Image (cartoon, rainbow, N blue to C red; front, side, top):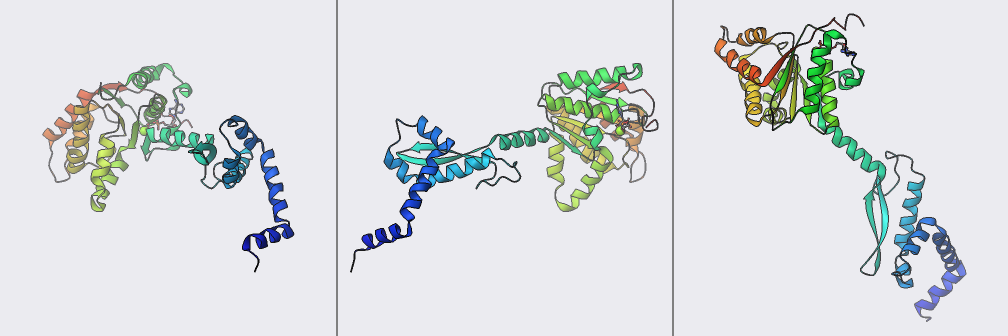
Length: 311
Ligand code: ADP
Ligand code: MG
């Protein structure tokens, strides 16, 4: 019986396998990525390392060629989506290391930035609001200036002073808040904007599904919290004391600014908050909440015409 080695040799020869392998190898070494690697590592590489690392070299070439013809992150054909192999010599062996490609890095940064600007129930056009796009007619100058100053100077944790934007329906209060949130985001300051009536409704519902505490914690810890349209919610003692009261108490102690918009001024909001769903009037509790709001905000009247009508 012939030894297995010689049978194998004969077989590979006859099938032309040897030749094909040699040709593939030649092709491989023509690849610009491989050439670049060989050139850079010419002093540390040995023929043995290259022979033993052929599989890695093929893999490297294949994936780098994918990258050279990148079809975009979603359609990335690489083994690990969005990752690019680099060749390295480690303990005398060729090794592949996978690093996120430029698109993947960009995506990650984008996601992180989005995390900075969170919102609940806020219309899309408001989320795009920018100070550059605001027409500062005389009427709105005061509110615009206050908004811009806050956006540029806010230091959550150091200074808990916020704003209270009072004005009629449609004058652009929420829009100004959107511009603030965007400017804060440019500065890397996290903000959370919520449409208050929907937020309170969600908090009520979350009692039943066990998510209440988590949601409350997230909102109360936001670096900058924007409570849009406070006073438009249906009142309840529970929301006032166990949601709003708790949030404001925490933020006051931690010096975290809160911004409000409302169709009510301070006195009107106090009256609104004093109505109890249990019947009767709870003036003292409403007063206590209002004291906190007043203490932590500067009152600004937003003047102007109703922009929703002129549209
Ligand atoms: P409010 O919150 O005071 O009721 P909004 O901020 O919702 O008013 O503004 C009403 C409408 O006018 C929205 O559709 C908003 O996008 C638009 N708007 C408000 N201010 C501006 C502005 N400065 N430039 C362009 N559109 C604005
Ligand atoms: Mg509004």
